[in-house]
Length: 104
Image (cartoon, rainbow, N blue to C red):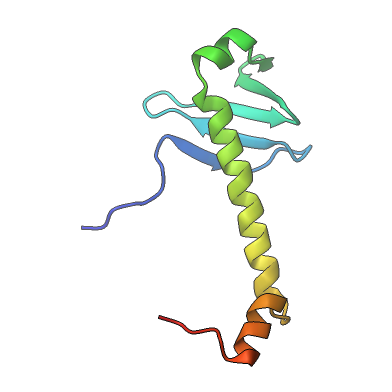
């Protein structure tokens, strides 16, 4: 039996044409939220509706999921860039050359 480690509550969708982040939040009836800068909008059949301050206070997990996703994407981008570069980080290479970098 295989288990999925992905969170079933929050799912990242492709960015829209303007490059805004889109998340599908919810388990039974997921709702698509779009982050435009610091503002969060809910996708409906009529278009985008701005999430009110009252709704953000009642549902703090909306903003938390966007912040977590933004931080994850930044870490992912940095990891990809570091893998592509052949230069080591200075402190690590200095300690390795000095012989004081031991792996347990």
